[in-house]
Length: 173
Picture 1 (cartoon, rainbow, N blue to C red):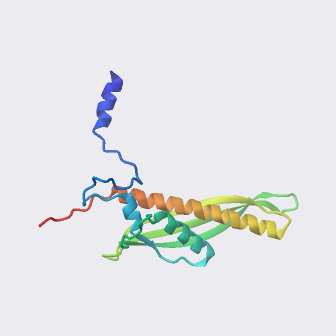
Picture 2 (spheres, rainbow, N blue to C red; picture 1 turned 30 degrees about the horizontal axis):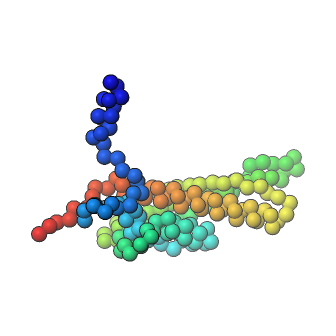
Picture 3 (cartoon, rainbow, N blue to C red; picture 1 turned 90 degrees about the vertical axis):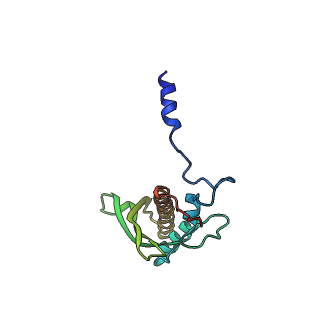
């Protein structure tokens, strides 16, 4: 009996997948999060890590048939820091953590006003090795992992924002 009542309560909910593509019978007024994400352009970001983040995020946001006009632009500032974790008795670090913080602002191109702002951060650890080349490779790999995590986090934050917006009302003559 309890299961039946619970199913009745859930039956009234309008649950849909966050990244669902538009259905064939969708009306003109229906928007999807995928279409909204495809309408976001990412402003250029300084430095190599910024270029990596911009490329990864642009790929995540664009739809396969990216013919959407850019209704929004995303501005991102990055800050990178490193922290030594494990120390030898000699005082030399053997492990380090790389943290990148992204401060982002989503602007509506029609008004020029920010509609969403916040910050996101991600971190990854790597070993400090005796070989400089190996350590550099470990740092670059950690940076790539952090950028991937940041791009996914930013995409999810944008998707939640677009999913929470009311559908656009199209006036009919």
